[in-house]
Amino acid sequence: MLTVALVASLASAALWQQWRSLEVEAAERSRVQALWVLTGALDWARLILREGGRSGGANYLGEPWAIPLAEARLSTFLAADKSSTSDNADAMPQAFLSGQISDLQARLNVFNLVDSGKVSEPALRAFGRLFELLGLPPGELTAMAENLRLALDTSVDKGSVPLAPLLPQRVDQLVWLGLSQRSLELLRPHITLLPVRTPVNLNTASATVLSASIPLLDMAQAQRLVSTRQANHFRTLADAAKVVGGAADRLNETQHSVNSHFFEVRGRLRQDQGVVEEHSVLQRDGLDVKTLWRDHGSPAPQDSPLQ
Image 1 (tube, rainbow, N blue to C red):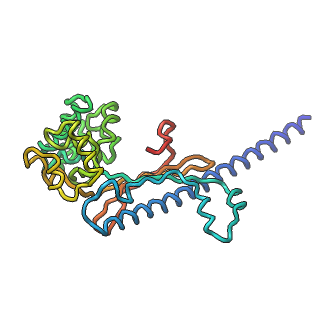
Image 2 (cartoon, helix red, strand yellow):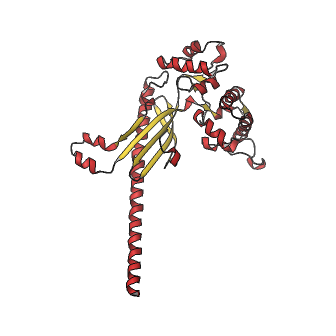
């Protein structure tokens, strides 16, 4: 009986190890396939942006790049393949793709806070209005601007400065500069980090960002500005200035624009084994569209729907 029990235990352990190896291999194969599909989706997004750049001119929310891709079953595209039958397509594992392209210049660029080694007063006032609209403590903005200036100052020996902040590369890392987690979550839809100073695109910015970036523009006026551009987008900054009204210096080319060069691409692939999401930032210069960075992984439970 002891021999039988020992053999049964060894057989069970070997069977479990084999099952585990198969599951790990299947999960890895599924992950690699998902990344290939998302890479193809990113190439499609780059193509859309490249074609949009051919016409030049203003960028607005009525362009093809601004239309999100609703979740679609990939197997439905097999209908165009004459060698595949509907029965074969139904028998295959199902995968669903969704995604969207967003204009990053519809947000305030945190790096605008520092210009030529000094805190930029116009950018500080815009962020100050944003903090006021969101009910955030102004002290956090002062700390963030000063810490960002210090992090960008290459003449300072970071080793000689106690608790010198690191330069953030992602919005999540702004807590390094003194933002609380609560403030970061409220700011997240309205701010970005881009490698160069960027103006706000008045054709794509939200009413909150418009009110923050345009002096003396309250939320009611910002909402009217959004409604006006839905009917006819602004082709030039002068078109927007006519709607804004007031002093001529309320809009300027260093802080405001009607076109964009930086875009965010989010892709999501859902299949039987789980969900894989990819997040990329693209820069478009004419017909040249390059990827600045990309990352991927499984979403957190509360973030499972694509935002």
